[in-house]
Amino acid sequence: MAALGARLCSLLLLLAALAGLGAEAKNSEDVRCKCICPPYKDHSGHIYNKNVSQKDCDCLHVVEPMPVPGPDVEAYCLRCECKYEERSSVTIKVTIIIYLSILGLLLLYMVYLTLVEPFLKRRLLGHSQLIQSDEDIGDHQPFANAHDVLARSRSRANVLNKVEYAQQRWKLQVQEQRKSVFDRHVVLS
Image (cartoon, rainbow, N blue to C red; front, side, top):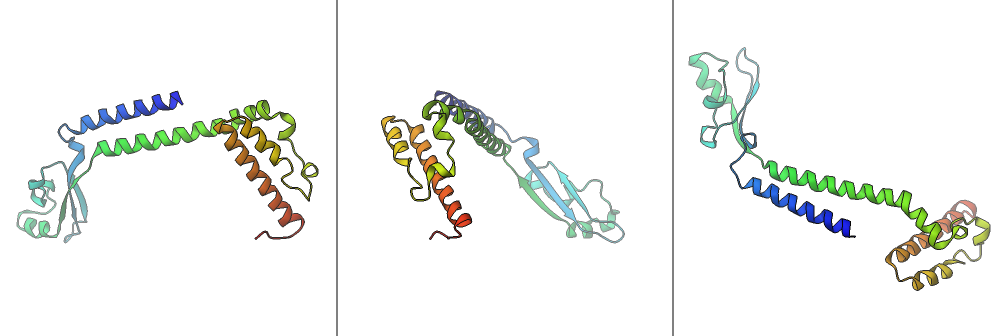
């Protein structure tokens, strides 16, 4: 838990540093004027992008070189649609950092479930309780040893043991449902 707290603290510091960068002047890649010009006479359509201020976002300032000669420039520019676009690269960076952090936490949890949890189960519950066959459970008492597991989880007031008990109880329920559906062909309601 201390490692998780340290990781969250470092993430918050990183986010604060990135937010400080956002207070500075806009990066030249964060603003642009985009002009979409459809085909005109014998010239094909084209998309023009240029980093200009919002007041200069028009065909005359963005479209370079002008594909049509002098008298047709006004008619060509009237057909072009120019839009001023602004984005926040800091927000994009923060979103990616949060996404990668969550992905990393899920990866660590997967490693825990595949490597650490089986070791803890063998150590805490003993190897004999992990391997259960259909004959051990029996058809009449599907939750025969659930009481023993519950008693052990209560004696150890540990969150991990409570989660482990719930997981084991769920596995027993799924196993009983599989027996009912596949062996006895009975659907549980």
